[in-house]
Length: 504
Ligand SMILES: Cc1cc2nc3c(=O)[nH]c(=O)nc-3n(C[C@H](O)[C@H](O)[C@H](O)COP(=O)(O)OP(=O)(O)OC[C@H]3O[C@@H](n4cnc5c(N)ncnc54)[C@H](O)[C@@H]3O)c2cc1C
Image (cartoon, rainbow, N blue to C red):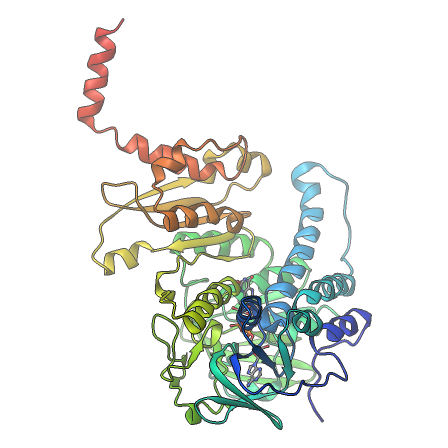
């Protein structure tokens, strides 16, 4: 029996499938030679194919599963859909305590929240649909793509000969080493958005962005969530104090943490899933209804015939140079299959770059892209550029400015004043090297700092920019004010004092 593409097969998912994997689709007759063949129709592959076709190139796009890739089907879109629903539930409850709002009793309708997500996803899927890509002039092949030599890809009986190819096959969830885990078929991001009934108890393995976002979301839906993680810090990539704010917010939402845990065994017994782990030298046993694994990703490199194309890869993915070229000069790779930045906007940015590099002898470098990111917990953590440790490792001295959200009227009035902005500047200058924001809507605000880094605009210019009062975005201007105040050295201060004594 073949695995289902998506579940449940309700009206929304059927509408969705009609867009991203239409029944009865017939692959076109391959052209003699394509300028560009793209394997994988996630965000990276879609942008590459659309941009190539818009420039007049003959383009083929190969997708074995669902157009839209992880982002549309099992990633950003469904996760942000249910995060929004859980926030609405949370706000409804909090409205009473914090704002004197109407009383809200009992649980919500989880199935309705999931249905809403499926309805919205089906609507968004039109943009990634087979029909739309055909309309753009792209030859869409549904099936598994596999290299058959250095300049050809096979999809079933079809042979696509190419001038250039782009591998955009993405990544999939990795299971951490734990005996029995595979056997109990835990939930992953590929199946969690299929469920229609809220588990009473959920164990989440992994405290990275996906684990934290989903743990908080399910806790807000009323599920008893325990988050088990090997490391002692949630969101380990982020500054410790930033991650701590998120951890505390999640704990207030009911998430129980078992950090610093070593997994020993997973089993199913009496209708429950049992996770055994070791923590602080003690063996623990945790029973729940479902386990969600969110413990890292592995690149989709197998069964692509990469050896036959002379494309090198390892456990981290396809090997590319700064221009995203693989070890076969005609073949490029983008997105999760090769990048350390596993985001939709990273795949998108790399796609734009690779179209120039592959088709037009461009020399755009992926390592020069300024890459912001955001974890959509509540509060959010967004970051761009260097962390202080990165700067130190590169031998760059920094001045660091941190301003708390407590100083921001809007954050106080909104009751969302836990967080901060932190900006790292090249020492003695206002040149921004990196920044972290912890705030509701941090992801919407980090763009201003990403623009400043990209355009080489200093923090001084942000300070001179008028920001509307009262907004969350003012926090960035406040960081600039703090920097300006810091420039008032005792000597300058003394000169000013003298001036004001003389000018009466
Ligand atoms: C739960 C979750 C939440 C996320 N949230 C966010 C977010 O909020 N913001 C953000 O920026 N990023 C988010 N991401 C990450 C984002 O989804 C990925 O970075 C993005 O989808 C990567 O795009 P891609 O094109 O590289 O690969 P993918 O989206 O993985 O697409 C690859 C495609 O290639 C196809 N494929 C693979 N092998 C073959 C083959 N041999 N032949 C044909 N087709 C093949 C696959 O079926 C798939 O459709 C999230 C991820 C997850 C899992």
